[in-house]
Image 1 (tube, rainbow, N blue to C red):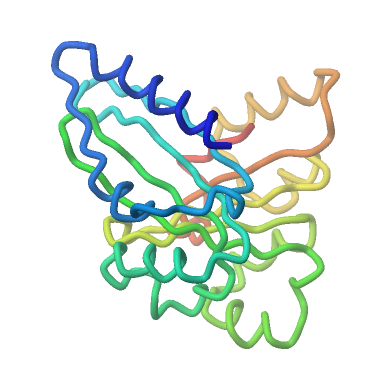
Image 2 (cartoon, helix red, strand yellow; image 1 turned 30 degrees about the vertical axis):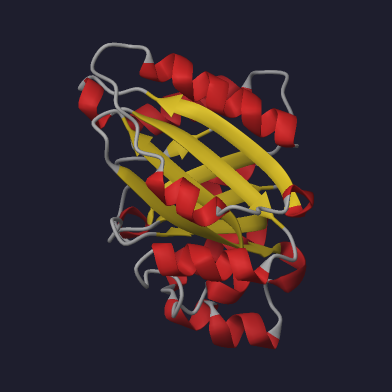
Length: 214
């Protein structure tokens, strides 16, 4: 895993070689510290979010850790309280970093709930009671639920892993563009599963203006 992290930073340096790109790793360095235990690292992924305005583009990194409470505590502190006292904090194993090309950086902490835990009394009491019914309905067709906790994000994005992509139209009201995308994939020979990401505020509207489907 240490070799993988070296490859990731090599990739970041290639991005930085472009004129006008400046990445600030200070949040990541504070999170990792001097003696990060890579045996606790389950997944390390990265990618680029390119925007029309170069300054708004970013390099993204996601780190999944297991049985590493001290690093979760560090992540909560770095989030300036966005997650540490949040009702979802007990469901966190995934940490995200955004390194913007203009030198800004942000940390986002992802809470996840698996299907086996959806309807446990503790999950209902600790998590679902904080959400409106519009957020809960798609759980009936999902095997996994994610949401991000970030100081910079006042409108959290909710992610559902649908077990059957045909359920998209049963639980989400689509605009014309999303409907065309869904119709296209309905005729493709692909797996039935589907990730759906939408801002919570959009779920509470009569139509989803921004629906990202993979």
